[in-house]
Image (cartoon, rainbow, N blue to C red):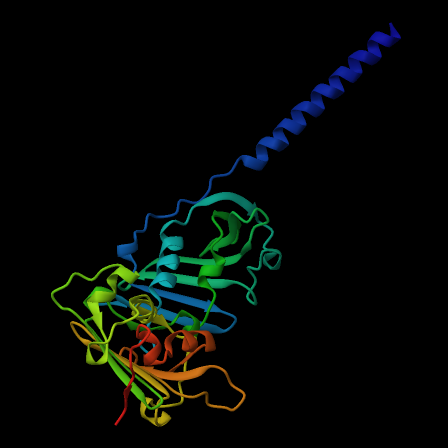
Length: 318
């Protein structure tokens, strides 16, 4: 009888604990995530990013994104990734209500504060913290809400960087098939390479050699010439040189002009210091002088004679 009584008491205790644990488990998920308003890429006309006491403002104008100030063109890929994160913002879970923001890098020292406008209307505002341990979520806090949430995707890295990092570093761009003439000056040698305007531009293979002619009709190494044109068609720099004018570098050690529907030019100068390997340069597509890496300069600065087939002659500069 005593044993039955003990089993009965034990059963009551187990039942009570089960109900208690079930209720606690239910309490953890008994919340509603805030509704994030729908926002499309075309809605966003201005983005402000603030981090560690510094801020960058991006403004969409005439189909381009500009860094305001100073009015530099922003890198399209970087802006696209930001807009994608802002329009695709999706909250997946409530993480904390304790306001211990440093755990999630949402404190004032570490957070990235982002605001997005549609004209004069503020459409999105949030703090971005660190990436969650899953590497598939980011800790965020919405404006006017003290709680911390998981947002889908890892996107903090998309908002890191100042004006220089976000600047579009494209310094020369053109459509390769449009080019019909290439003029190169290297040291004391210059040469002009022309393409038959009536011939269809072929692939950069030896079979395309007949499309190009060098000085005095010399045969051209089409593979090397087409590779040079390709390298120049979407050229980006390492960084810009803010404290120099384009006219302040003197005589270039290499220059190339490409003629198609319009004229494109690039001039490369000797390294500024004796032990430097990077090269200052200027181009027709950039208002500012810039720096090309040693590897970039080596790829571009080809002796005109090396672009001719064996037996071709260089044209000496007069």
